[in-house]
Structures are given as C-alpha cells and as structure tokens.
Image 1 (tube, rainbow, N blue to C red):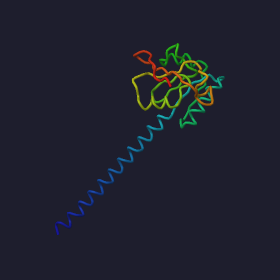
Image 2: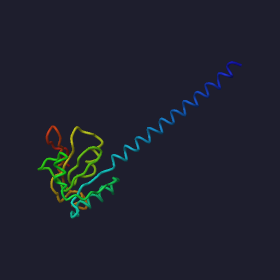
Image 3: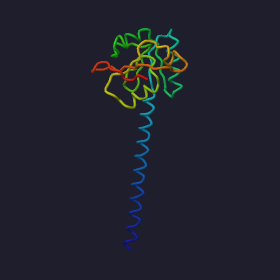
Image 4: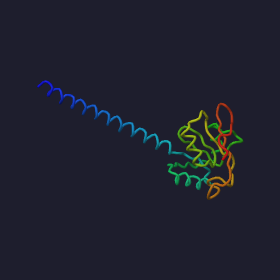
Length: 159
C-alpha cells in the first residue's frame, strides 16, 4: 500500500517538474526570438535627397531586416560623433545591435558582424562604390570593408 501512494507522488513530482521545464524552455525560446528580432532591427540615418540610400534600405528589408529610416542631412557629422573615421565615412550611417555601420555594406558582412561580435565600434565601406548594394542591382567584384574602434582601423572584409 505504501508503494502505491509513493507512485502517485513521484508522478505528481514528474508532472510539476516537466511543467517547470516546459515553461523555462518556452521563456528561453521567447527571449532568443526577441534577440533575433533585435539583431534584425537597423536604423539608417540618410540624406533625404539620396536615392541610393533608399535603395539600400529596401535591399536590407528584402533581406529580412526591419529598417527605421531617419532623414538627416548631417549624417556625416553624426557619423564622426559615433566614431566613424572621417576618411571612412560612407553614403549613410546605420546602427544595428550596438554596432555602427557606415556606407553600403553588404548584408552578409553585417550579419557576420552581429554574429561574431568583434570588439570594434563598427564597420565602414567608405564612399559610394559603384558595385555596392544600393548602387548596383547586384554586388559585383570585391568591396573592402574596414573595422574601427579603440584599436584603430583594420580591414574587416575584402570580398
């Protein structure tokens, strides 16, 4: 008789423990999903008269990013304030998941930045290269992207 009363107690404990595990797993999944959504949110400061910046923002949206566009004729000054080297200023300025991104940086390089989380302030593709997203329908050739931060400027990607 004691064994019979013990079995329901074990079953009840397993049920409660299982519920706690399921609740914890659901909470972790929700948090991971929220982090993934945050990582796909990008704010772009751009000159309102620049057509390539809008094309670039459309490109980012087509690649799954949620883009907030901010008209800012002084994005270049904002770029310097956010740490972009003066010679490294790109076509527009962006912020994603704590990183600064300057210029027409291809999506796969931004995804690598957010995934790898290097100890840098951000990355930049200076100027307006004609073969970059936003300037060309499809990226062609190579683009040299630079990382910048407290350790100076280094080549981040040359692809």
